[in-house]
Image (cartoon, rainbow, N blue to C red; front, side, top):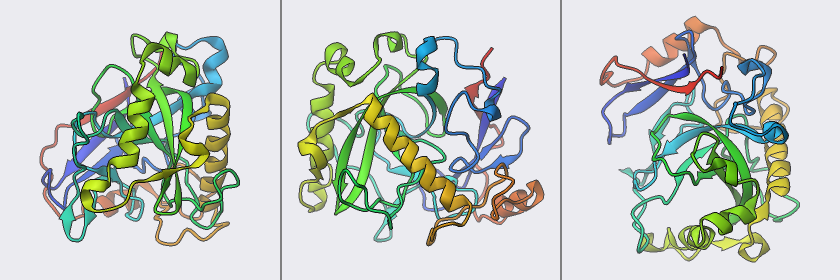
Length: 300
């Protein structure tokens, strides 16, 4: 039985396209705020995925896939809209597509984010000396399967890269789908180079160059572009989760971030199912089809 469903509104490849999320009961939720960060949290019955080793239970996280591998459309969680659906990023009035960085086509991993995390733009990161980029933390999933936009999967964290994007800290987690056939081989960042030689180098070059075709300079990195290990990455996740908690409890200034949610009962932004349904119905654009996609198989 699936844990999450998605529902499309508007036309794909248009500025009015939105991908909304529902829980297992069919109620609308915010993927940003209502999907738990950890796989083995109480909200997901506390039962770790069978394919994970016992000592890796604490390293299992939910990942929301925004951009499938080898595609170019920059899809992202709409952090400033109610219930935070996925939409295509618009810049200067035009839908954004990333350029192909030779010899690759589009994004070279399944790209997405961890829910319930936030890189605070008003908090300077002690390790990079730069402020956060105002988004959930990004994930590069390196498994063998091409995933779908809106899919919710369980990932093992392997390491992290500190991209400095126009002066802001923009962490990039390296992870693998726990259900990937080769997932059992990967436990830390060194395993990526061991079993997928060249992938980390390609990742570094991709992030360095992907904005150059748009007339921007090469991106920079903290730590001279060194990938940090799993332990370091888990501390970064912990920090961004604490920032998200402060955001949802109105203990910091979230600016334009929309914190509407249905699961965080003690949050001042928590709304009812009826209010959530009204928010979705108010979105302009036709539903392209009532056939829903289902993600996140319930663990047995």
